Amino acid sequence: MSESAAPTAAIPQSDPHTIAARRDALVAGLAHATGDTLHDAALAVLAECGVDAKRSALQELLAAVAAGHHAPNAASGVRAGPDTPGRPARPALVPPKALKQRRLGSAEGRAALLHAVAHIEFNAINLALDAVQRFTGLPPEYYADWLSVADDEARHFELLTGRLQELGFAYGDFPAHDGLWQMARVSADAPLVRMALVPRLLEARGLDVTPPMMARLIHVGDQRSADCLAVILAEEVRHVAIGSRWYAYLCDAAGLEPQAHFARLLSERAPGAVRSPLNEQARLLAGFSESELQELTRAGTERESGTPNTRGH
Image 1 (cartoon, rainbow, N blue to C red):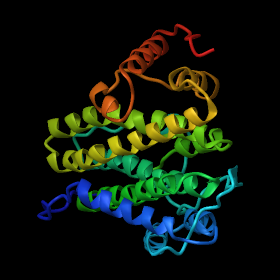
Image 2 (spheres, rainbow, N blue to C red):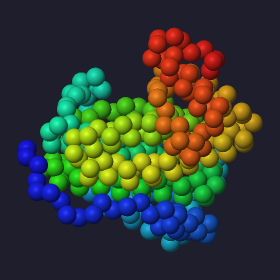
Image 3 (spheres, rainbow, N blue to C red):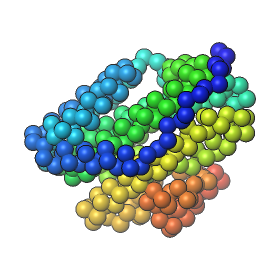
């Protein structure tokens, strides 16, 4: 497919004040809500298969929560969830190694890269919704945070699919893999594990790889696509910070030392998943400590060299 005419619409910029106001409205709605319908309501959105249907259902859920129509279950627990979330028939899902590497010099190559990121954002909507529907008995701020994240991820997905359309492509035109949701299965047993392995591992990896992707796009003259990724990167720092905050909260409640337990979880549940180099500046803003970054850098270096990391045992 050929690249369409140069777009004229401005890339919508991240607005922290608007995001904070939306999150505060969710907290206020949860504070005076009654009943315990929040989890089932989030599950219903998670189960929606169509892209447009899921986005519409999410906006309806956010409005209902802000209006005080859904409260979380106050009893601490873990609910069952779907083995597979609602998603459209396309893209076709293949093993990661089966995905074709494309050069960025063509519109198709750049579209393939943006499609991969859009697929990550679509999965991130589902992951945020699952963090709401699966875990009960947490503070209202927890649910407001992850509903706010789902809202952000939906905007990111829309931003990227809009850029794909400008390049002459659509979501579903390229195959994708299911690695992100695999981590949801690995971390389904406890919110502490979920906070460690999704925002602090998977989403934090996005902080590392996005700046090099932006540089590659700029190198081939695609500033507009790089600008889309810049908007997403700024908001993903907040998402990882939310995960870090709730991870620390849950460790404190369980009497666990956060850094040592994070290393243990990585070793037991995601061995070899840490890669280097790290975006240290973004990770510090997202709640990682200097000593954590040193340990993660060491783990990533050991992975690259083939040296086993036994520090998490």
